[in-house]
Image (cartoon, rainbow, N blue to C red; front, side):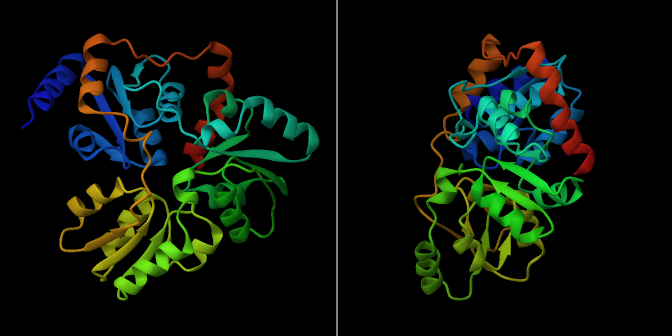
Length: 300
């Protein structure tokens, strides 16, 4: 075992800390985590944790969400500069302006947003539950922020709603093209194509299965297939190989999020040692942003 791993495990126990890691994190970071998952799964775990300290390995909006759901706990973000590009495409001020333009609409916001943006929403969602949450809203008009690809997918599944799209996107998923998929399909004709709903519509249209990272994992586990083309960030490969041995996975080489890879064993250890990377949110933001997250979990 890596000496850093030994030290982290010992210090984690000493401080009664829980380490949460997103599926896109580095393999070695996933391996020392108490829980690995997608945004929805980790949000629920954070809300139920009995640890005194939560170390969130991922990007800043995830750690902020953990803090919103655990006000009395100390939430540490090993890499405070690990900011999701998509989250930066939607500010609280922009949402407020949109609400003034569409006064009869409610705001459904992807969890991939800042805490201040969440404070302007009616309810949050993740890629796992976006369709069911939009379906559940009483309003006919839905301002869906910030992912245009996920919003387009939701709109196609809930035609009874007028989904007002935002022009945000995940650069990694946006970079995956039909050509990328068809080239892999030529090399691996028996492979099933599974795609994240943050991908472009034309990529989703040629996919066999669409779902969040956790849904992908569930699908592969239960599938009789042996080969899969996976249209999402390449960090998912580690968990798929660990939990689905004997199956082959093919990823698009450039589908890598450098921000998700910022968290390392060294930064996790530094966070636990110094306790100096705590997530701090002002009381007003906490009051307003917690509600949309809680509603999401209740309706999940």
